[in-house]
Each structure stands twice: as structure tokens, then as C-alpha cells.
Length: 248
Length: 174
Image 1 (cartoon, rainbow over the protein chains, first blue to last red):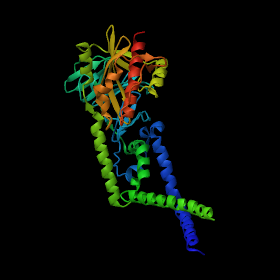
Image 2: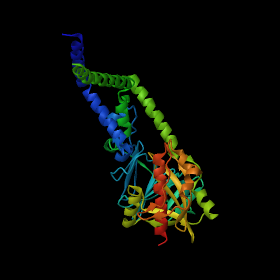
Image 3: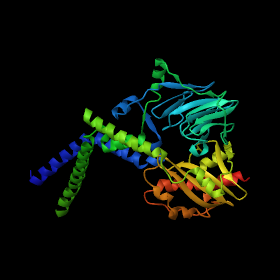
């Protein structure tokens, strides 16, 4: 057998071996790459994976919920930038709540920098930022005679509609105060409030190999090298026999 | 995963978290209150536009997603209205103020920018493109807004907010 044929046979064998061995990794790279390429359209940055094992893998310390705010019909507990409001997660990256009050058919959650006014069914009516508040940070929220009352460093203010605020006396205000969660409640809420990793971040880390830690990118580098070898050997296997046939 | 890589991943995540936390408040170029007061001379009492189901559907068509809230506050007099709107660029909200006079945008200002890149949308050279813009059929702007390399999503968010402010102005005056 001529040396050229031997080389071709060797290349074909190793082309197949490398392709088969790296198939799973190439598929992961292809799928994650495709998804990342369309990440905006798929809304990947707005989706989060919440799992305690994943948070542990990323080294993110999960804070268990410790306290709960209760009004007549609503319950709010929070941890890890998430709220569990009446058993539902209303969004991501939410601030730590300082209180919850209920007024007729609306309820209001306060954080130190914003008020979140909700309909009874949990639909957000309006989020009021610092510019719409009479003072900031909000230290406490309460209710008095069908008005929302806020305690801020500038004083105590009341509003019936969360649009205009007037100074208010402190007496007869029912301030929202948290109560401690029992251990069983903590366990029940902890899983729902586990910290999240955005799907886009997760795919990026899978694609780059960083998900596997410091040596992950080196593995991806090796895969890139293998891909280069595959393309070169593929080109060789495709072209050389044709060139040889052309000469005869 | 050994302890070291996990620790480095944790450090990276914490660092990213710290950066993200720092950006949550964002860079405040002008407080929304100050913007409203600048337009009217003093800050008038706010008005509210309730988003009925029909308005929600139309706002969703403009934004490409349902509006975040059911009540939009604004400030207005006989001719002009001011809308402070928020929209996500890539991951964080951009807060911008829109002044609409006689159904056309008079001027726009980026008030708070929280994204890590794309801040060029706050430059007057970009914002002046919105001057005199009005709604064309289909609730689109009557002109093309030139993009900025590296700020595509922020540009798109600004355009959506501009359309929404004109739509809200039209609705608020009915």
C-alpha cells in the first residue's frame, strides 16, 4: 500500500474517532450558540433558572426567608431579591420590602425606594419611584382612615391615592410590621425563593466552558482545536482523492 | 468541580452581582421631578391615565410586551404633556422623559440609565432625531431613527417609549 493511501486511511480513521468522541460537546456548543444568537428574541435574559443546586454550583449563598408581612388578605415574604406574594413570584430583582398594607380593593408594598400598588388580584397598578414619593428612603408603611401612610426621614406623609401626599400626624397609624416565619414556613418558602441564574448567563457559561470552572474554557479551547483538525482532515479527505482521480 | 474553580466562579458571580447592584440605581442624569419642574416652571399635580384593556392591548402592540402597570401618571397643560417612561434596554430599565407638544415630540431626555453599555442614547446628537416626531399610521414614528453601534437595544427601547408617549398623549387628550 502506498504511503499516500496509508495516510488517507489514517486520517479517515482519526477523523471519525475525533468526530464521534466530541459529538456531544459539539452538539452542546451548537445548541447553546444557536440559542445565544437568538437570545433577545427568545427573551433569555429575562428568564431565570431557580434551583438550589445551581445556586450552590455558582457559589451563591441562598438566604432563607426570615420574616413575613401579612395584611388582611395578602401575604408577602422575600429573600434573594425575590418576592413571594400570595404564593406567586411577581418578578425578579425586587428590593427588600419594608411593609405591606391593604386598603379596600388595593394593596401596597413598600421598599425603601419605591411603592408597588397592586389590585386585589395581584395586577400591578403602578410602581412609584423616589420622584413620586414624599421622601426617601421609606422607613415604614402603614394605614390610617383609608389612607396610605409613609414614614420617611422628611417626616410622616399620607395619601389616599398615592398621587398627592400631605404631612400626617403619627397617631392612629397602623404600621406594617413583619412577623417571624416558623421553621416549617421557612422550608416551604425557601425553594420558591431560591436565587436565580439567568438562562442567558447559564448558556453563555455552558458555551464558553466556564460552567465547569477554571478548566472548562481550556476544554472548550481543546474542542476548538479538534474542530479545526476535523475541518482540515475533512478537507483533505474530500480533496485529495479527487485531485488524484483528476490526474489519471 | 474542585473548590478553587468554584470559588473563582463564586467570586466572579459576586463581582458581577456587585456591579449589577451598583447599576440598579443607575446613573441619574436628572431626577424625574426636576425634569417635570423644568418643563412647566414648577411641578404641577400629576394626572393619571388608566390603561383599560383596549389601551393595554394597543400599548402592548407598541412595546412588544404588555405594559408593566395599569396606571400611567403624567403632567400636562393645555398644549403639552410630559411622560416619564421606563423600558428595558437589554437587562435594566432606562428612564426617559418625553415632552409632547401638539401631538409632536418637543424634546426627550434620558433621566436614569442603568445598563452597562449603550449610554450614547443620552447624547443630544441622538435625541434630537425625535424632535417634531409624530405618530404615523400603525402607531409608528413618522421617521426612521438612526441606530448607534453597540446601543441597538437601548435605541429600540427609546423608540418604543417615544411611540408610547405620543400614543398616551393622544389618548389622554381624547
